[in-house]
Image (tube, rainbow, N blue to C red; front, side, top):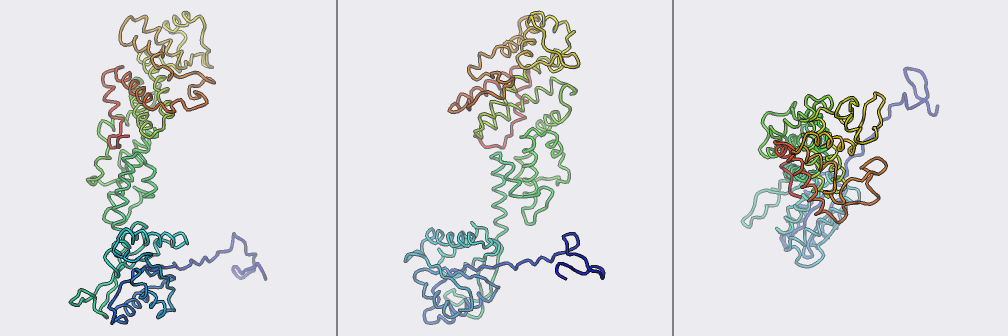
Amino acid sequence: MDGMKTIGGSSAPATAGNMKETVETAPPRKVLVMTVGEGTVEKLEETVVTPFRRSFEQGEWQRIVLLPSQKTEPNARLLEQRFPQFPLQVRALRRPKEEEDTDACFRHFDEVIEKLLAEGWRREDITADVTRGTKAMTAALAMAAMAHRVGCIRYITGERDERGIVRPGTETIIDVPPQRALQRQDVNLAAGYLRAGNYRAVEILFPGVPARLYEGHLKEEIRWLGWAAKFWGAWDRFDYKEAARLARRDGMPNRPPAMVQEFLPSDAQLAVLELLAGDAPPKALDNVAYCRALLADLLANAERRLREGQNEEVLVRLYRVLELMGQLRLFAHGIDSGNVDPGDSRVLSWVRSQGEEPKRNREGRYELAREKAASLLLHIETGLGPGPGREIAEKLAKLDWLGDWGPTLRNTSVLIHGFRARSRGREAELKRLLAGLAGFFCGEAEGNQALLESCRFPFLLAG
């Protein structure tokens, strides 16, 4: 019956639930790309026809592309005539004497391979035979093959006569997968991505690392570069817990290769990360220490965004720095700006000075936004008299020193700071603003400069 099949001796509908389809994988479509040389004019049968026939027969090719010069195109046409059973195409160099110009050969061969890829041929199914032709043609095809990461590079060797030409009948075909050289290229590229701060690109280049173990002589470099991309990428996006987990290097070898030493965190960086990966305020063991570490990381992160040209992201982080600085200084006085006790004598005094009580939450506590927190801090520091704490409080309460960069309250959020990018065309000013805030933070307490240095990624190239 149509649509029925027999299961266990009975008929049943052939549904998706009980039908196991047999999917036939189409065999790979192989391409051979070959340079064509002169051979010996009086011995074309021995030096051109027979050797090429052996190359054609060494593999199952769905297309064979011959790359002669203008001078050797007649040899390619002869091969077309003699071997109609093979799918030959001739793509000769366009101008006379280009066979001695490596750049001209490369442009032509590069274009030929590019067209093959555009037609749907897979790069891993392309073999480039660099045996014949001039040295310039050989070098150019090898470069084009490597540039397009073809699956195989082929050359022919054998016993040579007094002229250095392989004797007919002694030819041996050597196929060399270029993966070893290409892997080195990828490793160097991955290191470059790390230095540019492009951590995701490394993960795309080497999917699955470090859990996946790659083959080859650079497998440990690949493994460690993948680890570094995940570690620094997690830290860069404020995922401290994931970065701290990766910092343990579970399953990683004890001795990293020399080339990845620059991507390993220092002991000081690991100490900051351990703090940031722990409980956040108000549950942190030391709320003030946590806030200082977070401030340092926000500033270092803003520096990285600035080098990438993400200027509005810089502003968002700087606004958070201003808010967090107020929270930090209040924590130093034993006050959590998000959970303020209305019965605290210092708070009562501040409320009376304001003439208006802040709105209480369900627990009857005050939750103070940046401006109110800065006002409370200034009130407390003023009562304590002149000193560094008062100077910091004054700067947080009155942001005139920021010029027009100061956060403006819009829809109750500083993150909504207008309808246009505020930093457009003002990159130099923004850089000075960031440097100024970094100096403001470093002056808040001894040791803040060291914290900031620990949150910077030293391997990054200068922006």
